[in-house]
Structures are given as C-alpha cells and as structure tokens.
Image (cartoon, rainbow, N blue to C red; front, side, top):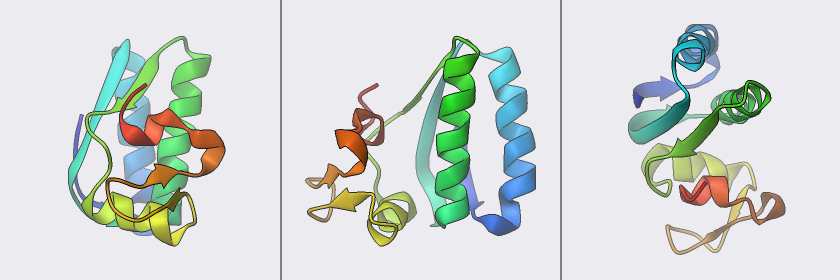
Length: 102
C-alpha cells in the first residue's frame, strides 16, 4: 500500500476507511511511506491501530523500509524515536516494526 500526501488528523477518517478496506482484503500489508509529506500524532495512532487490528485479524502489517521524511520527523517529534535519522532507534519497546523489519 503506497501512502502519499498527509497522514494527519485532517485525513484521519478517510485514511481509517482506506486502511480498513485494505485490511479486509489483504493477508499481509506492506506500507510504503516515502510519499508522505505530513504526519502528525493522529497519523501515528492510525498506523498503530492498523497494526493492532491486523494482528487481531491474523494478518500482518510492516513498513516497506525504515521511516524517513515526514514519518521519521513525526516519530522523533512524538518521542518514539531517538538518536536522530535512519541510524536512530525506535523507543517504544525497541519495536522493530518502525524499522521495517516485522
């Protein structure tokens, strides 16, 4: 699933609907996030909710690559990422999801 544009509170309802439709049809979802130009905490919450919903449905969600651009800035700003840049490390339980590894 290629994400572009915004993943913010303004797009939250539309993105939620989009995520649920993809989740209903796919066994595994890979998120390409390089096209995102804006991500806020609501966008991060949507990604986390998608991951939890997928897990509950017996499906998997992963990032196609480690975060960069708008997603990485949002993770750093929200305190989910330390060390700065792609060489940094996710904070939340050393969660490998944010590295695109699970």
